[in-house]
Picture (cartoon, rainbow, N blue to C red):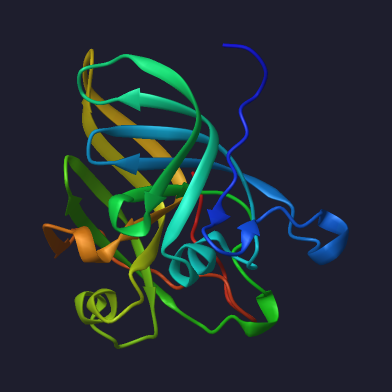
Length: 198
């Protein structure tokens, strides 16, 4: 398929979001975006400390050098550039920083299952202790990060499960949201232990 693909976001009136790392130190991260009929893969240069913030702060993006895969039928093609609105993005696999540790608050991870278009996502939403996770999810900005996530969907060869540290879900496009069976545990914070690993 040739050299590694690059994905950049362009604001319609502001030019490419491609400030060099010397300008803000944010750099590029891997990105996979899921729309109703497929997925788009590449890279993105952050203009915010977290990808979820960048997705929430902008509404229209120009994707460049994209590998577009059609789901569930199969088939793919390279596209030089395509404009996509935030409302067309159902999920985004997020990589890169999770924000400034100095500004993190103690949170509890609560497991949710979210149906958005043809995708079923199970992951943890991070809430303040004692807050209902469904209420928290409903009142977040449109793009909500879920950590330790699993995404299930139909691929050309049958059911697919993909795992990701963080999946950003478009709350405005969800069909339903439910609590999962898992019990939330405290996440890492000052003087706190993180989620146990196997």
